[in-house]
Length: 127
Image (tube, rainbow, N blue to C red; front, top):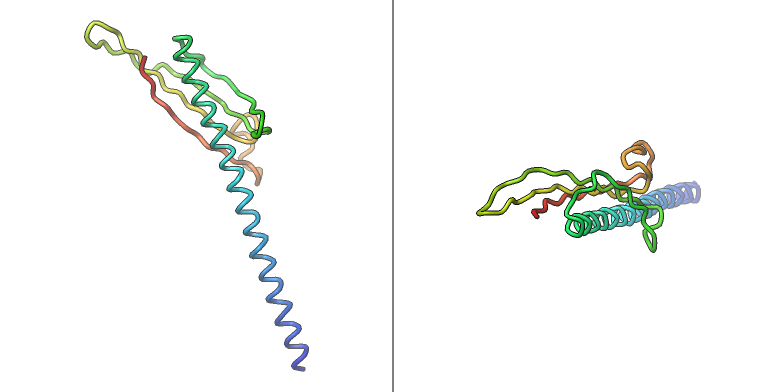
Protein backbone atom coordinates (compact mmCIF):
# COMPACT_ATOMS: atom_id res chain seq x y z
CA UNK A 1 0.00 0.00 0.00
CA UNK A 2 2.85 2.33 0.89
CA UNK A 3 4.55 1.67 -2.48
CA UNK A 4 1.40 2.63 -4.40
CA UNK A 5 1.07 5.81 -2.34
CA UNK A 6 4.70 6.76 -3.08
CA UNK A 7 4.31 6.06 -6.80
CA UNK A 8 1.15 8.18 -7.03
CA UNK A 9 2.73 11.00 -4.99
CA UNK A 10 5.91 11.03 -7.10
CA UNK A 11 3.86 10.97 -10.31
CA UNK A 12 1.83 13.97 -9.09
CA UNK A 13 5.01 15.87 -8.24
CA UNK A 14 6.43 15.02 -11.68
CA UNK A 15 3.31 16.31 -13.46
CA UNK A 16 3.41 19.51 -11.38
CA UNK A 17 7.09 20.13 -12.21
CA UNK A 18 6.44 19.47 -15.91
CA UNK A 19 3.57 21.98 -15.90
CA UNK A 20 5.69 24.63 -14.18
CA UNK A 21 8.65 24.15 -16.53
CA UNK A 22 6.39 24.30 -19.61
CA UNK A 23 4.89 27.56 -18.34
CA UNK A 24 8.37 28.97 -17.80
CA UNK A 25 9.43 28.07 -21.34
CA UNK A 26 6.34 29.75 -22.78
CA UNK A 27 6.99 32.89 -20.71
CA UNK A 28 10.58 33.08 -21.94
CA UNK A 29 9.44 32.63 -25.54
CA UNK A 30 6.83 35.39 -25.26
CA UNK A 31 9.36 37.67 -23.58
CA UNK A 32 11.74 37.15 -26.49
CA UNK A 33 8.96 37.83 -29.01
CA UNK A 34 8.02 41.02 -27.13
CA UNK A 35 11.62 42.21 -27.25
CA UNK A 36 11.77 41.60 -31.01
CA UNK A 37 8.48 43.47 -31.53
CA UNK A 38 9.89 46.37 -29.46
CA UNK A 39 13.04 46.46 -31.60
CA UNK A 40 10.92 46.43 -34.76
CA UNK A 41 8.92 49.40 -33.41
CA UNK A 42 12.13 51.19 -32.45
CA UNK A 43 13.49 50.65 -35.95
CA UNK A 44 10.25 52.11 -37.33
CA UNK A 45 10.54 55.21 -35.12
CA UNK A 46 14.13 55.80 -36.18
CA UNK A 47 13.29 55.24 -39.85
CA UNK A 48 10.31 57.64 -39.63
CA UNK A 49 12.41 60.34 -37.94
CA UNK A 50 15.14 59.92 -40.56
CA UNK A 51 12.64 60.19 -43.42
CA UNK A 52 11.03 63.28 -41.90
CA UNK A 53 14.31 65.06 -41.23
CA UNK A 54 15.78 64.07 -44.60
CA UNK A 55 12.77 64.85 -46.79
CA UNK A 56 11.18 67.65 -44.72
CA UNK A 57 7.82 66.01 -45.29
CA UNK A 58 5.72 63.38 -43.63
CA UNK A 59 4.81 60.08 -45.33
CA UNK A 60 1.34 59.22 -43.98
CA UNK A 61 1.77 55.45 -43.53
CA UNK A 62 4.43 52.87 -44.33
CA UNK A 63 4.98 49.19 -43.42
CA UNK A 64 8.56 48.03 -43.00
CA UNK A 65 9.41 44.35 -43.31
CA UNK A 66 12.26 43.54 -40.95
CA UNK A 67 15.24 41.46 -42.05
CA UNK A 68 18.51 40.34 -40.43
CA UNK A 69 17.57 38.96 -37.03
CA UNK A 70 14.01 40.29 -36.96
CA UNK A 71 12.65 38.20 -39.82
CA UNK A 72 8.90 37.81 -39.49
CA UNK A 73 8.44 41.12 -37.66
CA UNK A 74 6.92 44.23 -39.13
CA UNK A 75 6.93 47.92 -38.27
CA UNK A 76 3.96 50.02 -39.29
CA UNK A 77 5.00 53.66 -39.24
CA UNK A 78 2.53 56.53 -39.31
CA UNK A 79 3.51 60.18 -39.51
CA UNK A 80 0.98 62.88 -38.72
CA UNK A 81 1.43 66.67 -38.88
CA UNK A 82 0.23 67.92 -35.49
CA UNK A 83 0.65 71.70 -35.54
CA UNK A 84 2.53 74.69 -36.88
CA UNK A 85 3.63 77.34 -34.42
CA UNK A 86 5.28 80.69 -35.11
CA UNK A 87 8.38 81.22 -33.00
CA UNK A 88 10.35 84.39 -33.51
CA UNK A 89 10.49 84.82 -37.26
CA UNK A 90 10.30 81.11 -38.07
CA UNK A 91 7.46 78.64 -38.42
CA UNK A 92 7.95 75.50 -36.33
CA UNK A 93 6.22 72.35 -37.59
CA UNK A 94 5.30 69.63 -35.10
CA UNK A 95 4.92 66.02 -36.26
CA UNK A 96 3.85 62.86 -34.47
CA UNK A 97 5.43 59.57 -35.49
CA UNK A 98 3.89 56.31 -34.31
CA UNK A 99 5.53 52.96 -34.94
CA UNK A 100 3.86 49.65 -34.16
CA UNK A 101 6.07 46.56 -34.16
CA UNK A 102 4.38 43.16 -34.41
CA UNK A 103 4.80 39.63 -35.73
CA UNK A 104 1.83 39.67 -38.13
CA UNK A 105 0.83 41.97 -40.93
CA UNK A 106 -1.18 44.11 -40.69
CA UNK A 107 -0.51 44.80 -37.03
CA UNK A 108 -3.58 44.40 -34.87
CA UNK A 109 -5.26 41.92 -37.20
CA UNK A 110 -4.08 38.82 -35.31
CA UNK A 111 -5.07 39.76 -31.77
CA UNK A 112 -6.78 36.41 -31.19
CA UNK A 113 -3.68 34.37 -32.12
CA UNK A 114 -1.89 33.18 -28.95
CA UNK A 115 1.60 33.93 -30.32
CA UNK A 116 0.77 37.47 -31.50
CA UNK A 117 2.84 40.26 -29.91
CA UNK A 118 2.73 44.00 -30.50
CA UNK A 119 4.67 46.98 -29.16
CA UNK A 120 4.01 50.61 -30.00
CA UNK A 121 6.26 53.67 -29.69
CA UNK A 122 5.45 57.32 -30.27
CA UNK A 123 7.71 60.28 -31.03
CA UNK A 124 6.95 63.98 -31.28
CA UNK A 125 9.37 65.80 -33.55
CA UNK A 126 9.71 69.49 -34.36
CA UNK A 127 11.24 70.83 -37.52
